[in-house]
Structure formats: structure tokens, C-alpha cells
View 1 (cartoon, helix red, strand yellow):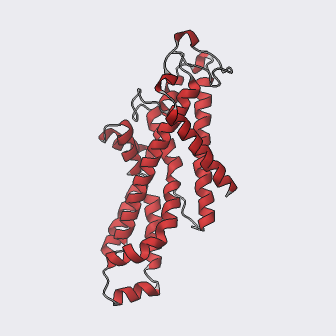
View 2: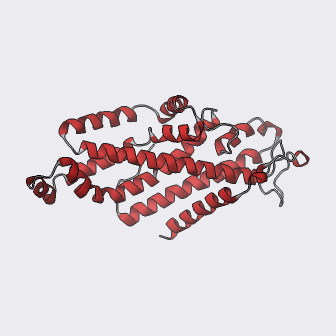
View 3: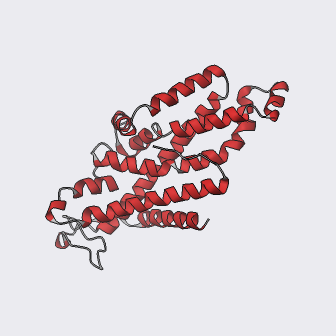
Length: 265
């Protein structure tokens, strides 16, 4: 509970700090170009005089928003497919085939293709991540549904004439809430890292949007000039946020005793 609370507090502080910062905080100031970390600019400034601390906070807020949309979308897809798999043997075979199909394709490859199809930008990137990060969670939901189908109260419900879909929604779904919640939360770190990866490659968010991937991509041209702070602090901040989501998800997994609810990627 302590580690989970600290991780949640860190995430909320980072998100709120980037959300409440005014747009003027990231404006250019040519007289302050290429400054190393000092008290007034703890993360230094870039080649346009923009404060890197403010840009990093804005970028982390964008990454958290993308992670929220992608994780919720992936969780919804996993839940729907899990419920469909419980409705019959043919549906279960189709869902299993879809899960195996998506797991056989590397995430980054499918992400690049889907982000290009959906036109990039925050909605396109979030949609692409959501459509590629559901298979592991769907497999967990499907396994739980199969286990619940053998319960006595499920057999009684069938004998009383209830439909399979109604049984899945009314009797099975409440038991899936802990696994679904923790699994959705554990999609966050993968979503944030993959958003930064495809944005770093120039296939994600537009350069006008503050994002860690864009900051790291732009900083590569200046590392040879000794401006190490342009990549070090944003990369470290991204790592800390991703680690916070991972700690929070694992803490909730232990508290709710959800077993193997971790979403891999």
C-alpha cells in the first residue's frame, strides 16, 4: 500500500503539474539558448531557449493522456472479446485465433502500420496502441471466463433458462473486475513507452505537440555538441513515470490477489 500510494501520488503530481502549466512556460527565449542545468532552469534549455523542465512536464502529461486512452481502449476490447469467447465454442475458437494472430506480430511493427492508417496525432496513436495491447489481457479474461463456466451457480443459471450472454454479463463479469482493472493499469507503461518510440521515429504525434518522444528525437542532433541534458532529464523522467505505473499495477495485483494479471508486451 505504501509503494502503491507513493507511485500514485507521483503520477498525479506529474500530470497535474503539466496540466496546469500555462502555454507561455514553453515559449522560446533566444537570449537563454543552450543553457546547462542551473537553478533557474533545472533541466537546462534547448537551442531555442525553451525551458526543458517545463517541456518535460508537458510531454509527460501528453504521454499519460495517451496511456489513459490506449489502456482503457485495450481493456474494453479485451473485455468484449472475453465475453464473446464465453458465449460458445465457435466464438471461443475465433477469439483464440485473433489473440494468437495479434501476439504473433511485433508490437512496434503493427503500431507503425496502424498509426499511419489512423493518421497519427494523439487520437490515432492512442487508437493504434489500444488495438495492439489487448491480446494478453484478453487471454487472461478468456481463461477466467472458462474457469467460471464450470461453477455451480453458472450451471443453475443455465437450467433456469438464462442466455449465455446474460450469464456472462450478470454472473461472470463482476468476478473479472479485479483482473480487468489491474490488467488495464499495467497496459499504461507499455502504452507510454510505445508512444514515445513511434513518436521518436517520427510516426506518432506531430512536432507541435509536446511529447517525450519528440523531445528525445530533436535532442539527438545536439548530443554531439555536449548538450547531454536535452535527452538525459526527459528520458529519466519518462522512466520514472513508467516505473511508477508498474509499481502501482503490481501493488494493486498483490492487494487484490489477481495472480497473473500482468499484461506483457
